[in-house]
Image (tube, rainbow, N blue to C red; front, side, top):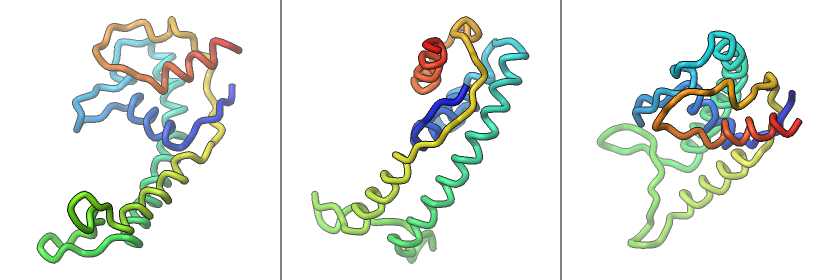
Length: 139
């Protein structure tokens, strides 16, 4: 089944499925779910990762466009403030362009999962996955 998701949601869903080590999240694929469900999710994950890679590439391009090189670290960064409490024009423009990209929608194929396929106990939450599962249940 095909579902339209915003790139921002795709970015989040990829993290929900694969986990996020920096945040200490295991991800759904590392939970106690059936091998078949993991296989089907892994197929979807590959597509999500392609979209995430394009968003990351575009974000890096925007950082180069609006940022400047830090003399100490030699990294390109965008100064968020031009003075105390006043956002820099570069930061505002960067966020506006990135936000417009993250609002773009893409059609993603999902297997007809059921909520029961994800019967595991976890302290983690998966808001985008639950949203997708709700859409799948309606069909």
